[in-house]
Length: 297
Ligand SMILES: [Mn+2]
Image (cartoon, rainbow, N blue to C red; front, side, top):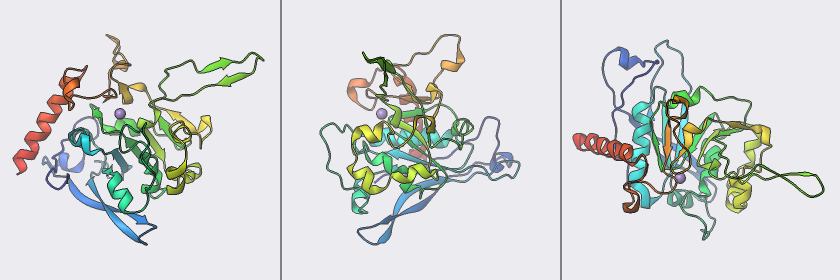
């Protein structure tokens, strides 16, 4: 339903120049397909994917990041704008694929019943990310209610292969509670940690995330990364998952300026959130995206 009519042009800026930037022309992103194996249909199913291929100016093969964006039909425009904001700024090749529950169900890799607490269609399907990436390389999962303000390459630069996953480790509650017997009980609600995750898909621990496990395990097991030890979870600066209504910009401190805004309470694509903090940035990006699509039609 989306995709075929929304090729976006990308521009390069920042320190890393792509080949075509050096040649002084702009290039359109191409669509390609990735395939996932459907155990129930005994065949490979193609999923819509958008790929940008960029070579670094020094001829080196850059890391190719697979990006899976949680897709919900109620937030189609949020998804489009999120994707546009990534592709527009990316100076490395990225491959963007929406995680669409309907496609995954058809392919037989997602079958769990929707629970009452699931606010989006990707509440659980997001944990299929390593599986969908064929348990290879690094892949990012991100909710569709994000707006990128910086080049995804900056995020890739902090990737460290020693971790199984990396994410912003938001802290809502005290991390530790001392029980009466003096034993330290560690409490990790880890709220919002799973909304943007870099997965080291080839890490042996992530092999746990099979479709069977993703379809049957509890929300706590999955959203709190209970298949991992704490030291296998790397930290990403909070500006890459800047929670509107929770995180704050400290004036004069550029390290607190958002690089990716997360409209976790609801974004301007919902009438009730039109005037939310940073809403103007999203609306500006959405208008730009729409202008680009219109120009191509
Ligand atoms: Mn969200």
